[in-house]
Length: 437
Image (tube, rainbow, N blue to C red):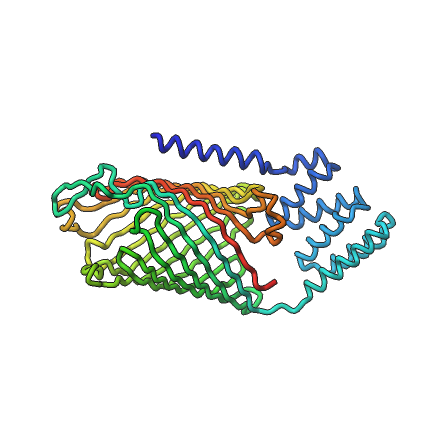
């Protein structure tokens, strides 16, 4: 009950702050205040972020009529026209502005200068290749890092024992990570990209969660009418300090279909092969090697341009070398996302059931393992300049991002070993680098 109260308080806190700091300007407010420059500019920016360029243009054109000498409005309007690749309309609006007697000579000179620069940048020959990179650091506080059971006891060969007295519950892990993406546009609707990542994880007190993870993926993306297709292949190699090492490789695909601005639907499937390294320390590691078949179907609904509801059902079939390590998992995820002035706020909860195909006699020879898990999270992420404006001089390109995430995991199981509760709080920072500029 205390955990539910805590999560509820956190949700209401984030929701209250998001509404306090990012109250959406409505069209009704614009109708009631058609000459309010600040309010209308805020509405125009809001519509631009949502991708509603036509609404942005209508608002800016009206403001340009009301404030004909305002150079900033004219430049803003021209920049939106350029985003829409509407060169004919851009030329018409330039001529209209330059011939407008209300446009000052200073404004005309400034418009000509800015437009020359914007056209030069727009018409500059661009390579079909694109390259991105990111580096980041995060810290996670885990209330039960060694997954000690709720009763602090476990089955071992049909005997109920207590967890070791020195088992670590609360601890911190630190992640230093980086990724590099290289891609090429094939045409206006498709591209291929290669991504390589490295994650170094260390632990504060213990060492069970320390690892190095190397991963890579190759994907192809295609826009086809209202469809967005994404087939891919992937590989990962975790190097664990005190656990079994393995490598995974596989392939999959996903497709998103956009009915309209409010509704979209997606589905996907994948296959992966996970092979564990058997060593003198982990003599039975190969029993964990497995093939996994996964599938999911998702539906998203946009309440407004800033608010979205999401849902997903999923199924996984894991077939391991040892049947007691084989299991089926199915579940449901529900989420709510809100774009605020300081970032993306996301609330999500997942319910899933896991059923193992055989008993693990080393643990208990009479009890079949079945787990029920509730996994909830609150995520807030965005540009660090949005929450710490004084850093704008340091991050002029808005390329540094922050992440705050609270997660709780509650597992009930027929085996007391796996009845576990834990809470995790992660905060991190990421620097994104665009080599295309």
